[in-house]
Length: 101
Image (tube, rainbow, N blue to C red; front, side, top):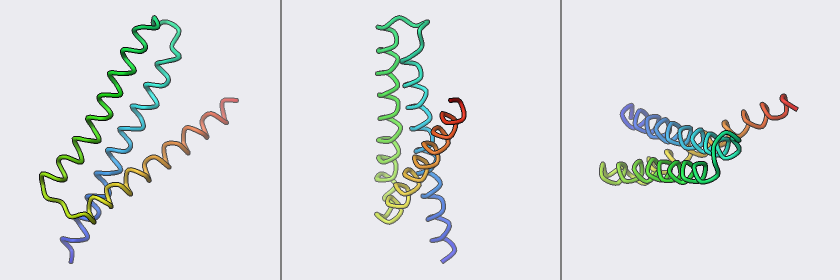
């Protein structure tokens, strides 16, 4: 039973970590789009390169889970961790935006 709980917590933690990285990279990419010191083509190339990095991060994590033959329940817990990370990061960013205005 302890091994099961440990794998559940690990799956949730890995999902939360991947989610946090994904949404932090997304936030940085969107901020870079508004950077006036960069030329328009450079901003777009940088944005689309970050899109590829984010897609690679999520798809790589899913591929790793499939290759390790993770049960569906653990993949679902990783997805739950990803969604919790999204909620936490969007809440923090919204609070920072409200404090700045």
